Image (cartoon, rainbow, N blue to C red; front, side, top):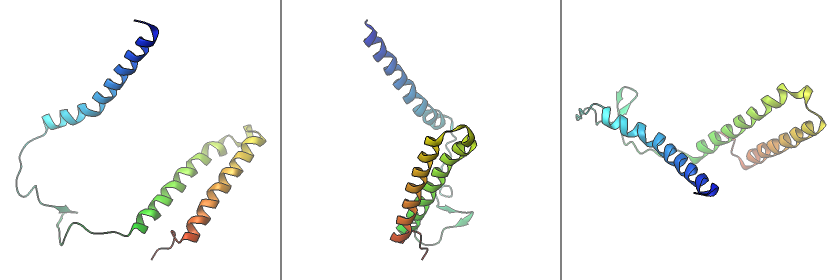
Length: 121
């Protein structure tokens, strides 16, 4: 076996191990779980109360977009923390890169604001 074949064997073993890590907990939990079905357990459950009405309720897409914009800006804030912690050790180039990053971020915020995504109706 040549060096390339050995690399492919290692990649295949890694993929097999990754698949096992994902599938093994599902198989083990299905094997170990208690099996005691009952009509009471199969009922829909809502915060300790019996459900009222249909469970298929449509939500406005705007709520999801609002949440998505929040998550995006929240994740972008995480990129600011390491930069701020090492600000004195970084040079002018890193400062200019962060200015470009913030301009793009504020541009996205202005775009979302003008599109009306941030309007809570």
